[in-house]
Amino acid sequence: MTIRVEGIGVWGPGMTDWSSCQTVLNGAGLPEEAKCGDPPAATLSPQERRRSIATARLAVEVAGQACAAAGRQDARDYATVFSSSGGDLATLGNICETLARDPRLLSPTRFHNSVHNAPGGYWGIASGCERASTSLSAGPASFAAGLLEAATQCAVEEAPVMLVAYDLPGPAPLADVCGIAIGFAVALALTPAGANDAPALSLHFETTPVAETVMQDAVLEALRLGNPAARCLPLLSALAAGDIRDVVMDGGGDDRLVVTVARPE
Image (cartoon, rainbow, N blue to C red; front, side, top):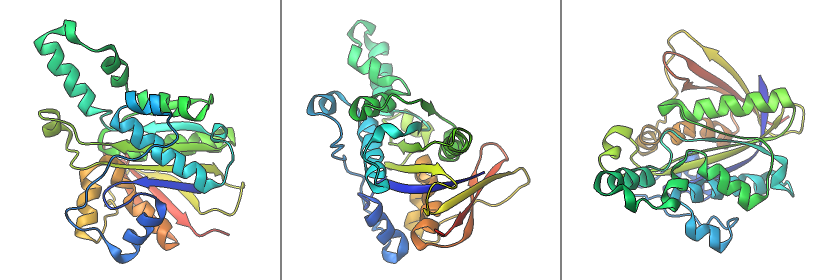
């Protein structure tokens, strides 16, 4: 299964777009103290931004970047796949604490922001997109699962699909079990294989034990391991370098998703 990447959006520690991400991945690296700030998410109206959650702002920011980078005039061209291992852990933590203290104090806004497809809803409102939207979770393999879902839709429907993967740390005790150390989000604007001369990705599964592709830089490897969405870093590194290489990712269980990156034709 082969698809093309026509636009990329990134937000994370030391990275505010694909250009700054390329600089980091092509040798500049990250300082150990780099933080993930709150993105502007300018696609959201002021009213929606005020009531939005942090994960929604992350998702909307990178989706808007990828759409702009793809050069498409209308974000409504894209069906969407939103992938997150834990959703908005800050909201879930607040709800759990409120239910333990006094359920009558539970905020309706908190509740509607707690559902896993809330970021997809905010993007739909911001972009006016009415195409199909899928929200999924697969633990540490969430990025690979999202890429597989988005690539499948793109190839089968022969239509553009936007993949958005994001995760943020949560409060204790959720932080102790979710293993997310720092925020990160990425969006890939995907098109069918023959659509243009953008870099191509070919996907297949390996069911025999194969080692995951890791980052050679220790800080970047810590980021990859510290956020399920950041498991995409080896793939982004290949795209940034323009290399032809195989990238192996955790596909869930003992499976591995192998992505072969090819240069633009």
